[in-house]
Amino acid sequence: MLTETDNAATAQTGVTNSTAGSQAFYGHAAGNGNGIEGTSVIGHGVRGISTDTSDPETNVSNAGVVGVAGSLGSVSSNIGLTGVYGYADPSSVDGFVGSGVWGDSGDFGVVGTGFIGVLGDGLLGVVGTTADSAGVGVIAESTVQSGLGLQVAGRAEFSRSGRAVIAKGAASKKVTLAGCTASTLVFAVLASNRSGRWVRAVVSAAGSFTIYLNTTVTLATSVTWIAFTNPANHGG
Image (cartoon, rainbow, N blue to C red; front, side, top):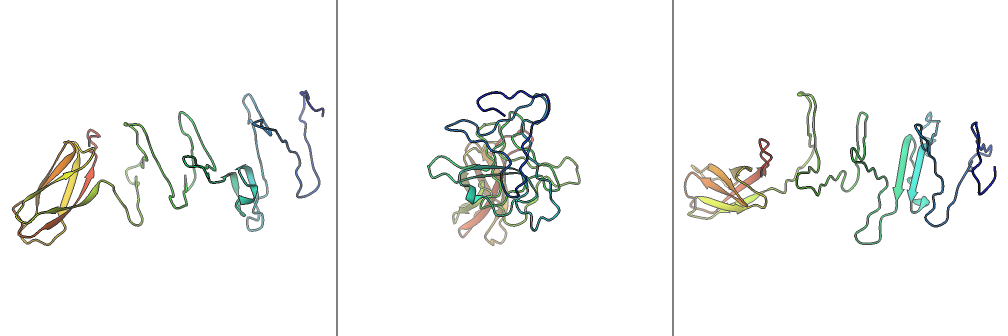
């Protein structure tokens, strides 16, 4: 093969290295050039294959493709049985983050299929965000009635929930809630033991909701509440 030219061929061209543990082929580029580029009209642009999956206890490096942005020495010591492994150093510059794998598309950025479609493991296992006013951070869905759209094992925290205190001698409490509308579904229950008292109604409005008891209380009384968007019109 000649350098600085396109080596035209009509059949497969390859490099085979018989020395175990050494590279068969490499490409280094200066600046922002590409080390290796593979293109195809209808086939695979680049394909990486590591074939021996018979002994995952010993063969801890058999990943099909490994992509690293940063230190190669920081790659996990066991990446066996992995089709694609990506690693990136964490960013030391405020406002920037490292990303081991980034999938980007006008359709699905990342698709995971299998017994577990996607597994997230970390301080924050999975984060879903949207900057669109009509967007949804995370959708959990079951396409069959007997399935579960969402299952939570352990504690759950909802930012649109809280505790309000109805003052002594009062029978209602107005609570400010950003984004609340007349369509918001708010549920409230007493969190203090007050005989003969109960939540009579919760009425939501723009930016707030009001909790009404059946009568006044003789002591300050706590009420816990949680607010949901109305599924009938996606309001509130």
